[in-house]
Length: 114
Image (cartoon, rainbow, N blue to C red; front, side, top):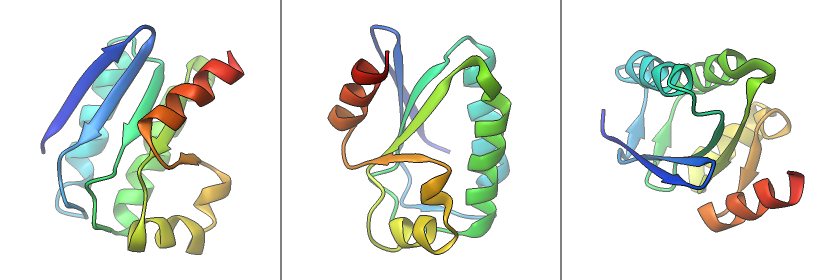
């Protein structure tokens, strides 16, 4: 699993450098994200702009990550498009996750809700 972490002030920008997030790597994704949260990263922008495919097991892993954060932080998902965005909408998870188009939009979101 190829994940990059960039810090910008109090924000942690987590970029998934994968084109697919499916059952074969969803557990590893969840584990990596839980470690990132445990390391004190509580304001997370999850950049999934490179994903061209995501399945329900991956969505489940994202929900688990959101639950792991609890009330300690916030996660904004940026860059969902095409079939990935369709999955969020079809499952109504677009009502659970804060979805924005770009990491810049996500940074603005954190600024406005601070």
